[in-house]
View 1 (cartoon, helix red, strand yellow):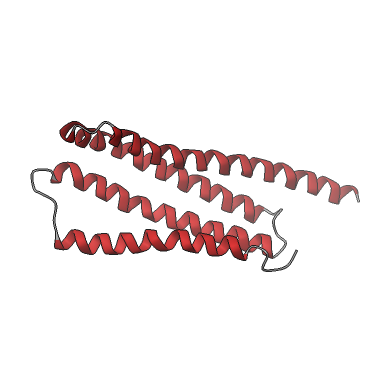
View 2 (view 1 turned 180 degrees about the vertical axis):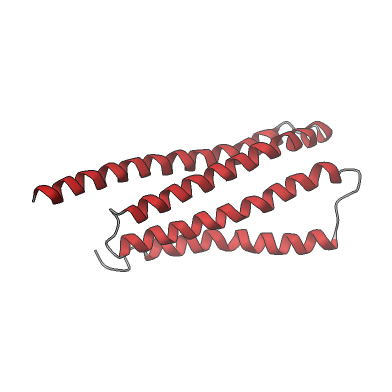
Length: 158
């Protein structure tokens, strides 16, 4: 396997992080220039704060994904470093899911005021998607741990 065989995946991770960072920065600037209606500030600002806080573990998880791809490039796919990176990705996904679950009551409140029940489904979709990533990372972590144990046993018998 060539050293740069994961280049496409690294570029994809970078392209995923770019819109998130741009929207976060431009959204912050726009929000300072155009504050929320004071009548709805107690509902909207907790949602915005939650979304902005969720960007931090999201970017951290993408950094861990790039590290994971670097480990694969350096022929360290079956090491404890990769298990650690997958564990960090799993924890970030759990944190993101938890943040969006905490935001859901405020989304429900907005849906009640605006008479938009579909808004609740959208809020739940983000929490569910992050939870699916956490389960997938946990599954990969467990499989990788078992593969490392099998590799260690084979190295000891040879």
